[in-house]
Image (cartoon, rainbow, N blue to C red; front, top):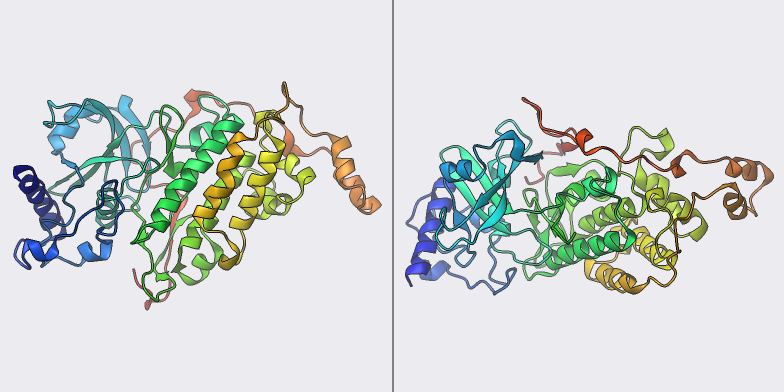
Length: 439
């Protein structure tokens, strides 16, 4: 009983002060809802329930979440004063630092490495995104969602404390080949894990739309297990007779679904499209948008989607860094999943549970993986692929392609570092739609 009261007090402190409300309002018994063990149950309170409840008693809203409340001083000590040597990266919310905590910091807290995210007042995100992160990850628990250890809400400071993910985001090994090129089996496991995370959110009794699914938001633990992070832009999904959620268009270039960009109408199928983009990145080793490439190749979806249903064209866009060490059958099946996810019509996209069912069996397809590296696809293969094309097109197809050259691995020293005064990433954007749409 004492434990329950302490948790209740902690949430009153968090949600009372951070939402600008106090106690009062309804009795605790009128507001209490049971949270299903494992997270994500029917008792989950929505962001709308909490963000608009400044005058209500929120003391029992998130009881059972097991989050720890940290002070700024405790987190400063855990990160050794946010020393630059512990800097991990920076996103739209602010910089992230590695730290370490044990029961000397909080009673009952097991010794563990943590990642501490600090709010940058000049960044692209703010208090609302911080609160969304606490509300969603404070209640949702799944093996493919990053664990929120705790938070800090002290004066103007807003910090989030997560479990430390040793291999960082998918961006590092996939695009920078740090620490090494991702083998095919690992790529496929990451895709399946990320798909399971999204399916869990979409299939919850109170669905959640992630809204910002991208490679940099997929974190990898010591075993390269994928976990979704950064729920700052997540939204409660439509309920009842509603078909979509109307919202301000926010996200990252190259990942957002076309209908969401045009209308601001958000559905679970918007996440499915974004998953298709990431799956395409996993297959090709290319970024969703890459301004350094020739103009027709800069947008990955426009360039690569037409190749996904043709095995001979698919082999030409597969990541050359894998040197052909992958199952052709598995790659072709995964490419077909990506093709369906990237359909311009939301109705033609599969739901995420169907994506999991399609991808998971591919993990066992490994009997056709070549023995030894396979060189880049040369003109002979390209000639065969275009055998029925007109003579002029055959000639064009025979020319060696620039995109099949093997990329040189980047040195870890070349990885981006935080610079003093650095602002938010340029990739983060907000489109302002007509005033009648809801924020």
